[in-house]
Image 1 (spheres, rainbow, N blue to C red):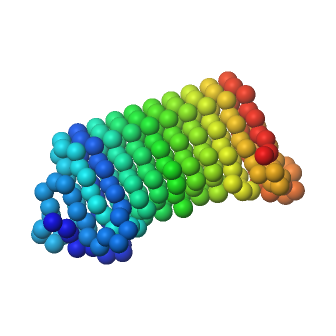
Image 2 (tube, rainbow, N blue to C red):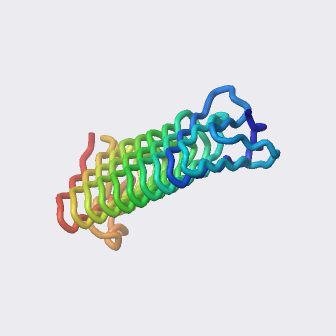
Length: 225
């Protein structure tokens, strides 16, 4: 049984205590379908509670999602709207979203594409982001990889390598206590590279962007391609 299509501002909420969540946004779909017991009381926005079971949910393209899993993998496929996801233990994988805000205590975070801001916090786990606008990423222990950033970057890591590839002239603030930092810029971008935020004001007017990169124990490389 399907649910009526949510209003534009509505959000589909999905939770499990111990079970994987798999969401698929389908082109042309106008309702919300869940593999668990359907909601037939007309409540909007829809709330789906999978308990300890694996949940599969079909939604219209562009649907906003709020997802929470205590223990279990979260997979979101297709083009969705704003995504807010939290998991205690389990990988989070998002294919294509308007914006992303993900928190994971223990588990890898993978965002392939987001048109807007990507915020990701992993206490322990690797964070990989493909194409995005602004990026604000923190990892307590795990590598950070930002492949195609088209906005400002803030990337902080306690222990792990940071790799950033910029798609344009935008400021970068990258820091790791232990690990190497690599920043790749387009050939035409004039960047002022400084080791500390307080030094950024000197000479910044003559450059397209400012790159602040610092590592307590590791090499820092800023290059053009």
